[in-house]
Length: 134
Image (cartoon, rainbow, N blue to C red; front, side):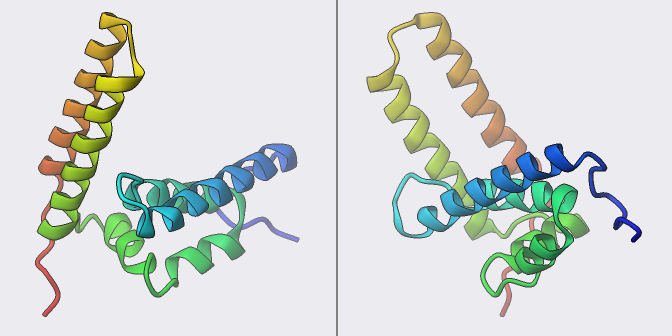
């Protein structure tokens, strides 16, 4: 039986990627209801992991009623809507601020994490902006 294009050949690695895809899908689902838990990033990562590990799960997430449009737009290079970009920037700012303010003691780690968060925000803002659906 021929393996679909893009899937990893190694069965053990495919299993690990599938497990990670399921984990990131769960994080994305939790993020729908829990403030400060991201949704879009984990779902995009899950879609990537599924594309490498399982044609069935890849098809499921791409055709999903809620997540499918985000993934299809991302894969087509259409970017995100202004609303989605704003939500991502707010979530990154809040979650990184909380982490930097309460969870870390090392100034170097704080600096690196702050630079990483700023880089994420710049990356998101530089992505193509898709018009809102009417």
